[in-house]
Image (cartoon, rainbow, N blue to C red; front, top):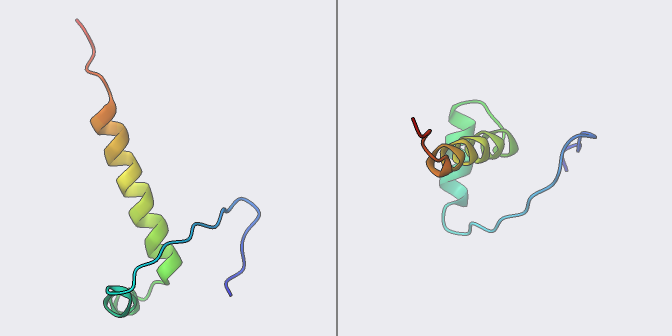
Length: 58
């Protein structure tokens, strides 16, 4: 079990069919599954925030 840092929160997800492929892809780039999950989550959140921003009225 990885050590949870004080400023971290655990998020659980179930991904049966893609687990082996995801784990292999993480290994190929020498990153852990949690490291990649954080990157993916941050990227997705940024995309959502940009999508939901209202354009400035001029």
